[in-house]
Each structure stands twice: as C-alpha cells, then as structure tokens.
Figure 1 (cartoon, rainbow, N blue to C red):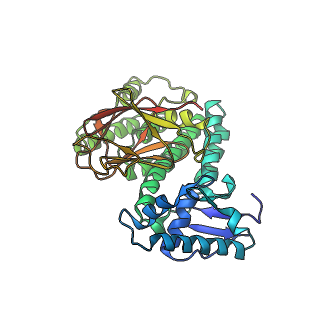
Figure 2: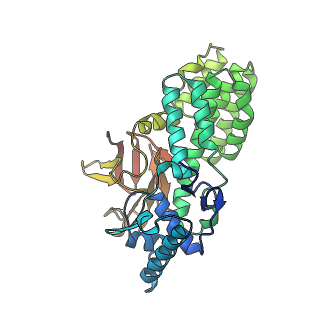
Figure 3: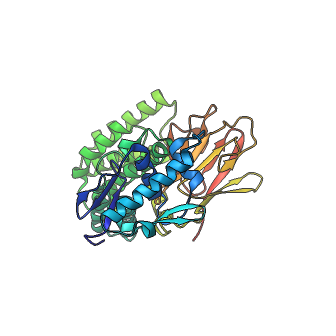
Length: 377
C-alpha cells in the first residue's frame, strides 16, 4: 500500500482517504452503494443485488437510475482525487466491480493480519501470533459501519464481523497466555465475558489465565459465573470442554498453555486460515441436506428462506420467508437468525442472534436439517 493509494475503511464509519486525508463520500444511499462494493471488492456485484441492498425488497421505479447516478458520482469522486474512476469502479456483467488492492481496505488488512496470527500460533510462535492479532485489532476504529446501520445488509455483515472481532480478542488472549503473560489478559477477558456472557471460549481463556496466575479460586469462580448465566438465561449447562477444564482446575493439574485448546474459535480459524480471502467468487462452503442435496454458500451473504428471492429457497412450511443468513467474513462463517418465527438451531441448540459455523456442524432451519461443510481449495 503506497501513500498515494486510496484507503477504504469499513471497520468504523465508512471511510475513504487519500494521503491520510478523508474524502467526503456523499449521501447515505451513495455511501451504502460504496460500502456494498467494498464488501464485495474485486468481484462483480449485480446491479439488482445493489438495488436490493440499498433500497430493499420493494425498490422505487427510479432506483436503477439512482444507482447509475451514484456510481457516476463515485467515479467522479475517485477521478477528482487522482485515480481512474472508470477502471477502479468498473462496469462488468451483471453490474459493477470495485478493483482495489486487498491491503488498501482495513477489512483486508484485518483478515491478513489475523490469518498471519493463526499461522504463527499453529506453528507455536505465540509471541509473533500476538503481534499479528494486535495489528489486526488495531484496524478497528469503532463499530463496523456504525453510520450505515439502518441498511439491513450492513447490519447482517456487521454482526458477523463483531463475532470475528471477539474471536480475535480470544485468540490474542490465548497467545498471550502461552507466552507467560496470563496476568496481562485478565482485565481484557473480564470485560469480554461481561459484554458477551455466552461466549464460552472467552470464559475458557479467563479460567486458564486465573489458574496459571496462581488464582485457583478466581478460576473456579469464573466457571460458577458462567454456569449461572447459562442456566438462568439459556437453561443449559457449560459444554463438556469447560466442565473438563473445571475438573482439572479442581484437581490442581498442571496445564501446558502452549498446547492451546481445541475450541470452536481455534477450529474455525485453522479451517479458514489456509484458504483464500473473502473475494474469490467461488463457493467456499456448502450446506448438505439429509437427502444429500448440496446448497452452495457463495458470496458475502447467503440468504436462506421460503421465498424464491433467497439464495437458498426451502420448500418447508416451517421456514420463514426470510429465515437466516450465512455471512462469509473472509476468516469465518457466521450464521444469523433473520428474526425467523421458529428460530435456527446449531448443533441442536437454538442460537441467540448469531453464532460461528464450524466445518461439520449441524444446522436446523424449520424442519430441514443440514451439515455445514467448508470446501477444500
């Protein structure tokens, strides 16, 4: 990334800057068009998809003309600050493509640094992994696209990226603990479990951090807090790995923090770190039904529901018109319940809003059952 390159920002309010100077982008809908193009950078995005994203399912008759006007404005804006607007925001079938270097987008840098951290941690280079995770988290300037949350496509993607951000904080804590710096992670982990009390991997790292810092009673107390919140809010018990960890702490067993833990977070990271980033245009995952039929999870957002305008349409009376969305963030897959009538189950438990998908997990939507599979590249 040279100083002269434009820098696009999604991990905070929408941002376009050149030479460190912010460039005004325009009206909310024009900003939303640019945001959608950045999310889908370096691959064609259909004009109909852009219209649906910005104007919703029942767009006004002038929406297509307005889209063309917004694209022209954005090209002119890019040309004004010294770039070839037409080649950067290119007209391609069936719509438009924003051509931009991956590291010229803060999300691209987040993905790159996060994947580098995963590779380092997997190889046992935990100090290096910590540096990469910190660099990834440093890309965030606030809540993702907080100025455009009124658009549904932004809200879904931002929810998924919030999960990725949490996962990276947990991965950083795991690497810091492996480096012998467990005490330094306790404050951040306590804040994390307060803000996200159902994230068991965060509780796991908090218990480990307390235990290896010679604070066994605090580690046991953390487990009791988790057990209470899960029982009162969800009516469930902690997962077997957390119960096993609790027993190990009770028995005062030695703990090798450099081995890492086989958590959902780690499994998700490793399964995706060796794959290409967000914008290949090829399906990176699929849902395999009990019948054997496979449904591709392709693009940033895959919509699932009963209506034919979904990416995956299910002829199931218990499926809502727009039931669920799978978001491919580039480093993970996130399943989101789109305010459905009957909910979404992941591994036989109803999700609360959203949850990360891992290779091989079971998904139930209405009366339809699927196995989620991440494809080899």
